Length: 195
Image (cartoon, rainbow, N blue to C red; front, side, top):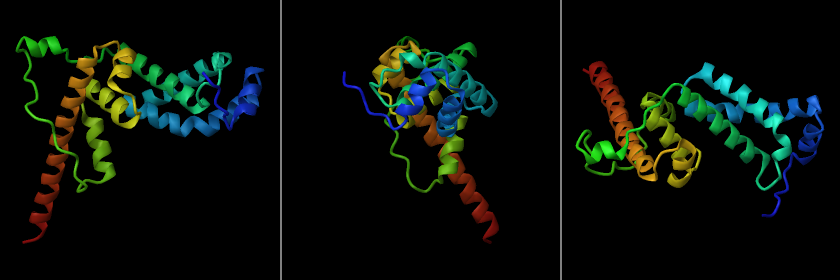
């Protein structure tokens, strides 16, 4: 595989030599974006901070394994995602297995939810994603926001690809329900104010 020219290659080389100032500079440049990734997965600011610190410690400890086959940001993001997932595993996040559906223990969604209309604000969408059950939110965030495909999600989470797809479908359905509730609440408030 061809090495990717990274804009931070000189900082990375200095980090490989143990330069603390270079580590701090990389941290400063990537911390906010990686914190956002961590929050989307963990759905908890305090835990996201822990994940961020642990991920950077891991990254700097293993920086010699960075070969430049991707950008440093992509390599670091993978570490952050894996660290956040490990934190969720410690909390015992449950994934609905398709075998449960096959044996009639859970209803299968009957249709594919429609695309999310533009009547919701980004803040409302973010809040609704935060209300999803952990397993749904994790798969939804990895697929939609982080750009993983179901094969990658199944490997990272150690679930089947079918389970990933099922979780994603259920997450979209639940997200639509949550957003419709918000829309109905907004309409009710407006009706209440407008006699």
